[in-house]
Length: 383
Image (cartoon, rainbow, N blue to C red; front, side):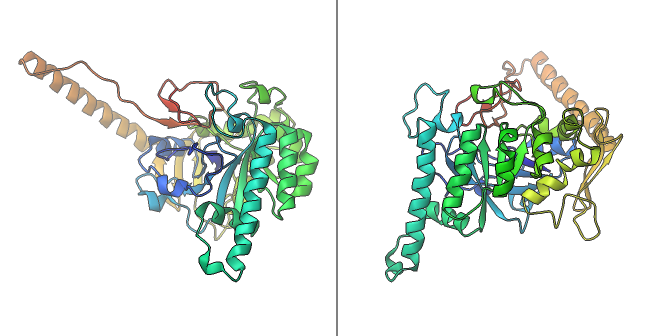
């Protein structure tokens, strides 16, 4: 289960303003994204599709099951609680942007955006309950924030620096709610005791480091330290490629921190299910739960392990042997089309130079690596 993903979405970031809690990934699902199939090949069965990280308060997220071939509505994880994406730090204040013309520009500005938004939401809720409620204009942006204060919608917050993590927990406590999950959270080891006291979970990377300034203090022992303090910890991908190796990413905590194999594997199975409030249905093999299963060729934490079959709701959506046959069919079809084009050219038919096809990949703007294909970053810029 991938707690932090950006696959299967037609766009990822509404960055026009710093509070966009009215927008919904649910309205934006792209069911034909090939990453759904590719991640099934790596043993992923469910993904939490997040809004981008250019906003202090971003859009509403969508939990999906990787039912390859289903339409957008049938991908959605029915009955899952509503979540929303928050963000802190460099992405929000747009440190890397040369032409930022949007508040906030600083970390203290990010804090003020949070407080201002929930102050407005509190006043809005009071007005809806007041004597003149029928005159109050419906505000979808504030409706989502009222849901948070009433514990009907839950936050997953992009975060790095310890001071901002603590500040955000204090802000939440001021308005009577809890930050459900801090994602990335690469300085979580510094404030794990405070996170546990607050009731926050952590969804982190295994050993990513130094890809921007606010990540300089990241250490590969982060997940194990937070786990040992008693925080519910998951390993996420935030990346269409790395999601195919979540099992290997989890295994790194056996080396870095001496975590048991069972606890390490839970970081990509039961732990994210708990933090996403779907552990009654998925996350472990148990009578009565959904039959979301992976048949591995080797120990699932081994670098040699391959997903031989991946089942969602008891249906085989990926079969490695069947995939080999499909590849042969695709290769034969490609060769047939190439030969047909060559024959057309020989017979004097009109031809044109080959043009590459482009595939958009949505990202959080947090990665220094390149997939070699067009990527749309958190600010909507092409990289």
